[in-house]
Amino acid sequence: MFVDARAELHAPKQEIALLANALNLLVPMSTDDGGFHGPSIEEFFPGALLFGGTPFEINRITLVRIVAVVALLLVFWLGTRRMTVVPGRFQSLVEMGLDLVRVNIADDLLGKKDGKRFLPILTTMFFMILFMNLTGVIPFLNIAGTSVIGVPLVLAIVAYVAFIYAGVKKNPVNFFKNSLFPSGVPWPVYIIVTPIEIISTFIIRPITLTLRLMMNMIVGHLLLVLFFAATQFFVIQLGGWYTLLGVGSLAFGLVFTLFEILVAVLQAYVFALLTAVYIQLAVAEEH
Amino acid sequence: MLHAVLSAATEAAEENMSPVVPELYDIIGSLICFVIILVFFWRYALPRVQKLLDERAEAIEGNIAKADEAQRKAEAALEEYTAQLADARVEAGRIRETARDDGKKIVAEAKEQATGEAARITATAQAQIEAERQAALVSLRSDVGTLAIDLASGVIGESLADDRKAQSVVDRFLEDLEASEQAAAGGKK
Image (cartoon, rainbow over the protein chains, first blue to last red):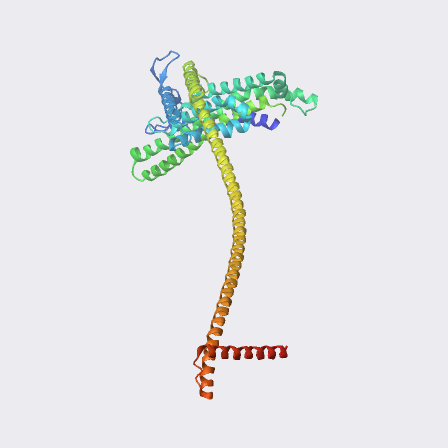
């Protein structure tokens, strides 16, 4: 539990460091000569396209999210519309995806009964994050729907509410006792442990969930933009021998695109997995 | 460099460009996305998948039950077959036994019949032999008589053609002969 808490305390620091690095990367670029347009943080604050200034503003990011949601609904609607006992290729693929959450996350961590209860939330989290992450590497979309704080924050709050609900529903006394006064610790230590536990469980958890996902996506996007903008700069604006550098940066861009796909899946998995872990800790009798 | 970072940071702060400060529309949009997907999975996709999994489990169980049933039937058939085979063996044994008995009976009957026939044939043959012996005796008697008379007539030069006389002579001779035979037989005895 201590290790957990420390890891969680450190996690946001790492992510803030990541963000600082990203800023360091992009700031000098944007102050370079006028020929090169590097990525900037402004990309995550696109102008409104529709309903500007209202709570239903639509901009590039929201549009990308809508595309992701539509794609998700389409894939799973087609995949589950006519299910047969002996699955076809597409159905197998969809089932494989759903099984990943159902078996590897929900059932493994929460058991059959609780796994089934929280399966809709975990499935939604995983696939919503996955689809919105993948928009970051899809041509013409080119930005992750999760790279703006809204989605990660909403999902983190859902996770937060879900694990507190699970704990309170199961056994409120036990839940708070386990969370705040872990057993096997001499009582004076509680003076230190309990505040740490309060912070780690009820404050840090949603923050780490949010930041881990969002920062990964922001940095991924900045990296990709940097490589492709550099390629464009080397090849078109400088030309000549610089084209070789352009080839290098393009290759890096492609490699990092593949890497981003991995990160997209991984972050979705980690988010859903951590939510399941939090719920599991909340409903556990003793830990 | 540091100055640039600071200026960028302050610039971002001035325009509220911190990526960790959420906008209201952002939250609302995300919430709507989440709710749509949640409802979709919760009410549509996952129940269907669950139903499918149940069906699949049922199908597998059904197949297992079917296989068990087939196994059971096969075993029953085998048992029945074995029983029939045993029955058939017993039946075959019984038939063989009967056949052997029948064969013995037939052989005995045939033997009996053959014995009877042989006895009958022997009896007939003996009767015939007796009859032929009688006939031969009679014929011999007359032939011997004629021969003897011819011989005697030749010897005494007198015809003994007178039948009555001849007859009596022959009879007398034969009686003598028989008497002498009997005497010989009695002597032998």
